Image (cartoon, rainbow, N blue to C red):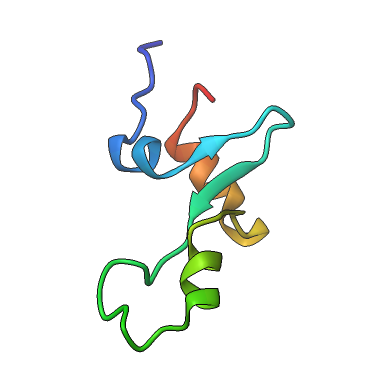
Length: 65
């Protein structure tokens, strides 16, 4: 059986925590920032857990997590 390949795009975007959760960065922090409040921009800095509906697909993209 040949080795499975990891999807490079997924590997760059998702990280696994010690407990096994997949984390991602939040969207909407790249441009048009002057109309967004400080609080909103500050909250966009933090990582968040990926949704349960996407979890299976993302793990299939990264077989060696």
